[in-house]
Image (cartoon, rainbow, N blue to C red; front, side, top):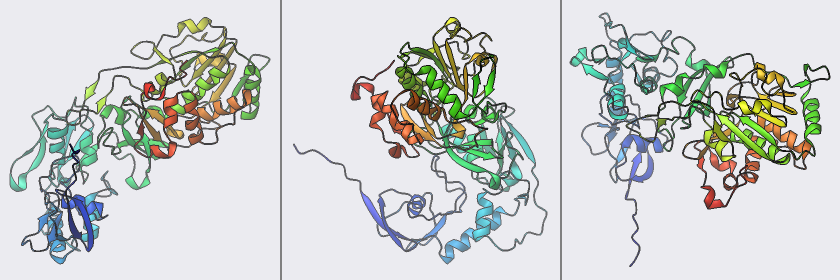
Length: 539
């Protein structure tokens, strides 16, 4: 029996003179986007239903008597569509004038200025002058609860926020009240948005600054921010995000679309938990314990030469504590160093909490483990220890007298005598807590926000992040520090780039060897199961 194949039915159309073939059922606005044409819109969002509410996406379709909303109209075979025809432009100009009847001209103080769709479209297609002579309506500001403020004067009633809470959060806490020109978005009674973990997504999708974040209010202007693609470090979901920074500080975190991981959304826990990235007081230079027992700052060359001399030829093994906030490249490099000195065991500690699912996109959750790279640490043979607060579990290492490595774990909860008995104590991290002061070598490492690397999320998806902040002092990525150390105690070359460090992971875990750095792209790639690539070398 012949194998059945399902061919995708397509239609061919012309948009602004450009002929293209798209799957049957494609909406005009999506087809235009495929052609690189932005059909103006407010109510349309690719993650929500399309009500054709705002009437901004009106386009002319040849042989159709009326203008068609591009967000609901589907492309038919032979359609000739014009987004910039005289009729379409005139209609959209009228819509914009209507919106500006009551919209305040408060762009100098509006948080949305610089990324406001109303600003953009008025500038591109709006009327030169408004004809309104009466005073504008003033509705004022409302606290919707949680992190959200509502400026009713700016609202264009696109209803994206209402539809998000109904369709995606499935927690209908917003509605349109009153009728006609008195329409306004409101909460139900005094309940507000308090307690809904996904509510800040309505700030992202508001096109005009009617909904703003209390956390970001008047903190920075949109055009002053640098935007860097990254991965949320706050749980094992690994939501794709943008780190938005100014003056070498993270100002806010926004979700970055990835249908395989987080669609267009992220939780408020991850979004608002960024202050730790800006924390000061970092270790800024390598410190080596001298003959008098004091930690003294030295050059990288001197520190790593002395450390390599101390480790070279050792086969006694080692123990380690790693942080699941460190990158795959960092943790994998430490595993390679441990194998070079005879192997050994390692642990990690992670804070845990309640798992919360986004009902409208159930594969997106605030995961129980509140760190990005728990699955990466496990893949490289480190085991979980400690309590639900990410503390404890390493008391047995206090009396350890061999070689002890700590990578990224601050040791803030640990007694100041931790590591004092170790024959060699190497601390690679960010802060000099009392326990870290016992180290023979203190080596300053970068955080994920200051370097390039990868995390492995709960789906076993390996995802890249990029540097968004400048490095403090002489800090370096841990994969670079440990890579140079490996070159000093073995016969391997030191990695020059994050791609080199990633490719070296295949020698520790074969499944990483099946992935190519260039193929990870912005969306990441799934690791095959270990059984599919043979047994690894887990320590």
